[in-house]
Image 1: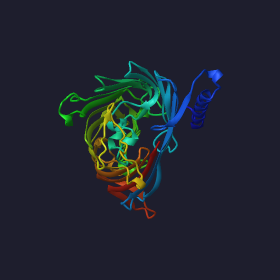
Image 2: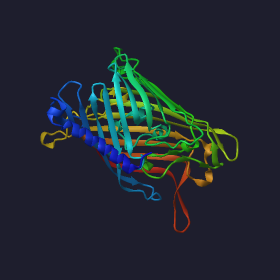
Image 3: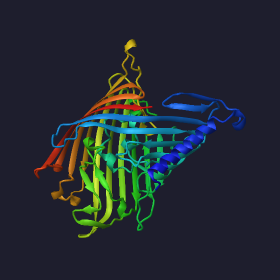
Length: 437
């Protein structure tokens, strides 16, 4: 894996080279006219249909988080995201994207870097680093997540990885699919050992069974499923589950790594994920639900027999746009909603308002919890309520309240006196200014 400074240098070099090509004299690069503008991001594009195009933008989230439990002492300001985004196409058959994260709490900085070869109008072959195809919640873009954080199931998903993926749709876009092979090591590098070296297989399929129905409320109902499988090395056994108020921090509600209550792990057979999802939109409403399962197969510690470690999460959520905007499911994910009337007090328009509600459950494997350490819980249940004020397509304010109840106490602080503080619930209010352009 290249050092971070080298990766940034290479990224700047290739982007600079691309821009130099765009501004070469016409007698060098041929007769070509380029236009600049803004549509979901700033762009430079050639005049011909399907010609060259470069889009560049960024994302920035500034938070203030208030934690009601005084034992936590976590209240304060934070930069949750700070990203630079480049994407575009070289021809009508080839697209590319690069995304870099400067904040760095949960990523190794390089988020996306891939090329996409398009064929047949609705199919593509993608190679590089990008999201593995799994889970509706994970595939939904940040601009279409109407809570301060994704569900607890997010921490069971494969996230970004390096690999190759075939994706597309059939039946006029009513069936969407994606399947691929990946390293199975996570984003921006490889940590595999010398014992196992097999790719991770991942797939997701989504279908709208009633799209041709005459019953209007059923037209946009979609169902889907996803799964991954990999034979992994011990270096890949690293599970950390977080509640909404612990995202972006070092705190967790469940930890499973090399050091367990049975001692240091000696071997592991594989890792399996599976999920089922349903989503629905109608008028100003959107609702979705998802179940995710996760299993390490054949974990073997220094003492005791080989055994599995199994985890499950599920959630149900609903959105309602008070100002009348209509959410839509496109290509198997929820599309970001833009306000019908942008914020302009002089004309009496104030953007869009969205109210969101979610119930979220996590179930951890108690056989792998060391009770005396107080770092993992068997169950967690969370309720989140969020109000979104979308002023413009690129500006949004979010006020989110989340309460999470833990089945077991979690150690949060060792006092100077030697006493230990524990919490068995979490009450968090997050205020966020979000900008994505």
